[in-house]
Every structure is written in C-alpha cells, then in structure tokens.
Length: 143
Image 1 (cartoon, helix red, strand yellow):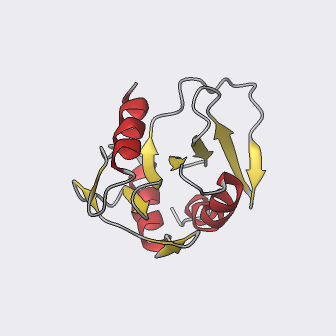
Image 2: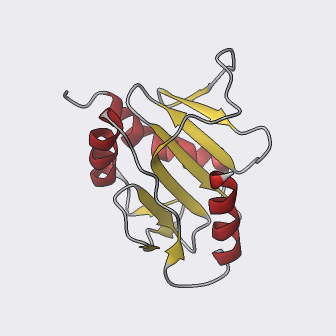
Image 3: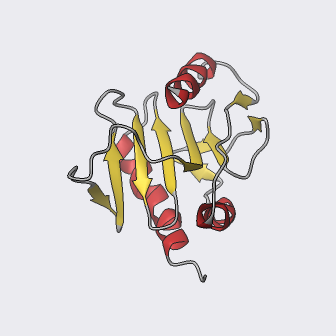
C-alpha cells in the first residue's frame, strides 16, 4: 500500500515543477551500505531528464525530470513477488515487474531491493537498462 501511495504522489506531481514529494524508505542491515553506495553512482541525467530534488531529502531517493522517473533504494521485498516468479534480466540485474502497476519495477540484488517508477513518455526498458549498471555495482560492493 505504501508504494501505491508514493506512486500516486509522484503521478500527481508529474506535471508540476520544483521539488517532488517522495516518502523515503528505511533500509535495514546490508541495504543501508548498498543504498549509500548507489546514491553516489546514479546518473545526473536519465532518458533526457535531469536529476531533480525531493522532499524530504534522502540518500535513498532519486527523481529525474518532474518525478516521472523515481527510484527508492532499500524498500521491502515486493508483496506480489512469489519465490517462483521469473525476473527479467537487464544488464545483469533481475527486475520484477509489478503485475498490478505497469509503471513499477523492483531490482532484486543480494543486498537491497530498489524500486523504480517509470511514467510519462519514458520507455521502461531503456530507463531500467540505464539504471542496471549502477544497481549491479551495489551487489559487488566490498563487505
């Protein structure tokens, strides 16, 4: 439910300029280190949109453009993801596509779940491919 609320806020603000309101996740354990590392690896430009600002500010949240692309690192395992679900591999990262929300994807790594919302005119496969490189690096982070 929390992810649905975040998505609604993002979509409501997608047409507005300025800071985007996004509820930051609260990573636990190894996910804290992985998400801190990911924050330093994310691109400043994604699919033609510049990285924006969020409120509250958090190293675990990133948005591009008016919030039509949003990333939250350290989210819980997707409720709808079953142990037998096949993940789509893009750039060495397994992605779970939410069957109820076609704009919501979750990268599954050995250290953290990374939720990405792709809306607007963006092509999800292209955005996920661009984000897979930095996300793949958090799995390989020294422990």
